[in-house]
Length: 218
Image (cartoon, rainbow, N blue to C red):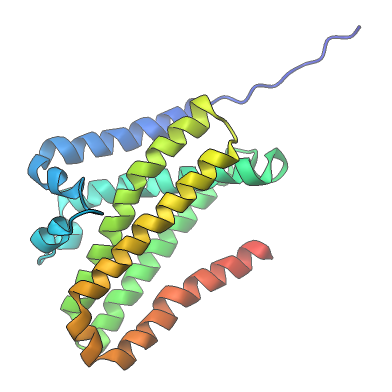
């Protein structure tokens, strides 16, 4: 009977990414403790958005640290969920992760830049910046859920479609709550500029995801 060589994929690089994300989270909590306390209850109370949705909101140390945490965990979740739903043949290489991370970073920067530019062109910079901050805050919060999902998918339940599915459901749910909150906060302004809002919604919110969906299917 001939010996069969078995290859066991190393999780060291994933551990390093999770540790890096955890460092960003610990930094945000320790350096901005009061802000973190308001942030942690965001889906149940929009006090965080009301308190910190001010000038310079997008460049604060806390917001940047949480965006780093979000990007790392969102990209890692996309990789691990891909393994769970699509198998090793297509996703089973660590070299696809930098592509996912780079794609998310470029997509986020382009999308945020386009939204801020649209706000400038339509003379509604404050509204645009406020909406970007609010949506990013909820996306950053959902990264807390994805962090837990990534831990499970890496160490306890590798390639579990149940864990990946629950993580995806919670990601969508939290960001849907964020969208509802944004609409409630800005409902008067949106009502007065309804045409521009519909244009913004189609051009900058819906079409990018349709394009990405088409590219992935291709």
